[in-house]
Length: 82
Image 1 (cartoon, rainbow, N blue to C red):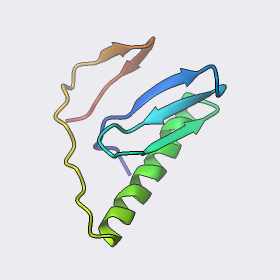
Image 2 (cartoon, rainbow, N blue to C red):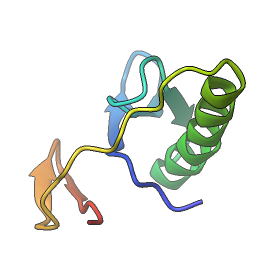
Image 3 (cartoon, rainbow, N blue to C red):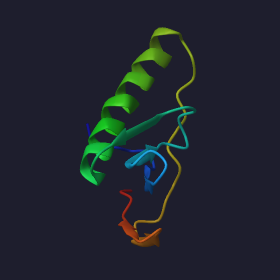
Image 4 (cartoon, rainbow, N blue to C red):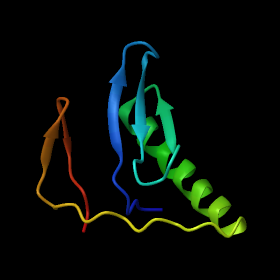
């Protein structure tokens, strides 16, 4: 699944892992030993979050409109898709 939600990934010294947060999906957070693993885990968790929301008949937030211009954040390049 390709993400249509913003994913914020950062290094956590406390956890010694990368943390991936999906701000639009409350509580949707994943981690990984590498940046790519955190991103991959976030994609899985997002899908599970959405499936659970559908099963419980809860609303699924629409993704935010984010510019497709690359942004520099915490030393990492992030590019969102329209």
